[in-house]
Structure formats: C-alpha cells, structure tokens
Length: 195
Image (cartoon, rainbow, N blue to C red; front, top):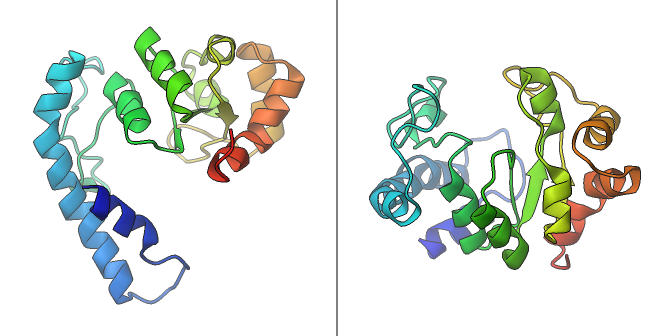
C-alpha cells in the first residue's frame, strides 16, 4: 500500500484541465485501489481500536457510507469522530490530520509522539454550533497545532483566517501568538520537514 500512496502523491503534480493518463491513473488509485485496501483493513482497525459500528448517533458510517455526490461517493467514508483516523494518520506518518475536535488521550499521545500536525477548524465549530477543539490541551501535550478555515458550503461558512484566529483565541484557549503561529507557520514547517 505504501507504493500506491506514494504513486498517488507523485502523479499529476501540476494542475491540468486535460484528462491526462496520470490523472486517470490517480483516479483509479483513489477511487478503487486504495478504498479496496482500506475496506480490507477495517475489521483489523475496528478490533485494534475498539470502534463501534455506529459512532455518529444513527447516521450511516463505515466503509459503505456514501456522501452521495459524484465519483467521490465510491470511496469508503469514516465519520470525523472515529479515533482510528487520528491513530492511523500518526502511524502512517501523515503530515497532518484534520477535524481534531473529539480526541482521546491515546490520540493526543500519538499526535505528540509522531510529529503529525493536528489541524483545528474553528470555523466549522462556529458554523455548525459544535464544541470547539481544546487547543490548550494539545499544545500542553506538545502537539503541533495548525489552524485552517475548511471553508465549504456544508459546514464552514467563512474564508476569513483572521476570524478563525480570533475564534482560536476566544474559544479554544490559544494565546494570540500561538493562534497566529498555528495559522501561518505550523504547516509550512511540518511540510518542510522540521516541526
């Protein structure tokens, strides 16, 4: 699977309006091969991390959940509250993991020891009236925290990073300096290989 993930990242490095061979190959990898492998791993993930089949209050979840919108609906979907997503991101050495609102102590330990950046999305919490992530808890555990807006028509109605920075200070326990650093430097440093 490592080879398929690396191939996916290396294909179609520049944007093109044309449906090129690399773009088609990337589509096969993202919509067929990687989801097939993920489906084969779900029983192991669920047993290793004691994940119940329904973690979202009755909404569809698991590998058969579909978002119902276009070709992306073919892939497996996991609800954002599943802890194995954070643990797997850390295990695979992902640069970052998003939607880090509902974290267990094991998630925070994994983030702290792996160097994976926890991306917090205060605009989502604001727009959906959901609980804000506990940035202070992450920072005190030594986790690198990044801030993003995640602007989209379904769960975040702002592109304003100054607004997200303000929410991080007022609602998530960050200092102004921490919030500014997390919105600007954190991900750039992680992507450059130095946390």
